[in-house]
Length: 178
Image 1 (cartoon, rainbow, N blue to C red):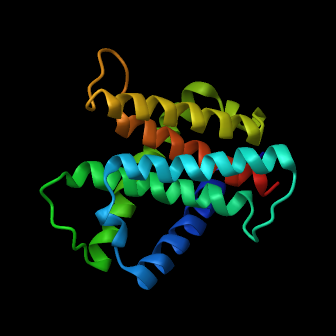
Image 2: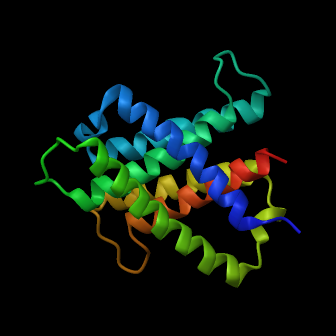
């Protein structure tokens, strides 16, 4: 039996390492992005994954795995940006950016465990291309919610969709390791 906890934590560790390295290189320059721009950044990465899945090869020396890591990290950035709101200063110190990452990853992990209990690890039987399609669908939902001023009548909000996107990208990273 595969160890979901270990696999999930290893995928998170890989994503966090990239986040920390880029934070060291660029600081929290992403704080300048509006939430809609974060959504578009994730969309670009998911669209590239879909393109690579169709074409079977890349001309740029970054593959699907790198893009899924980017989706995880931009998803967390999206959650940080939503939480911070418009009136929070753009300057975010390194330690605070790491602490917020950890806070949101912990919440997303808790969500994964709750859903994993109910769905009996159905994600293990899904294709990576399905994760890509679901991520793109959730991005379309987020864009519609953003176009509606963040309001929904019945559906989950932007934050819940970001959390699902993060989890699907983490599942994809686990499946790609097989």
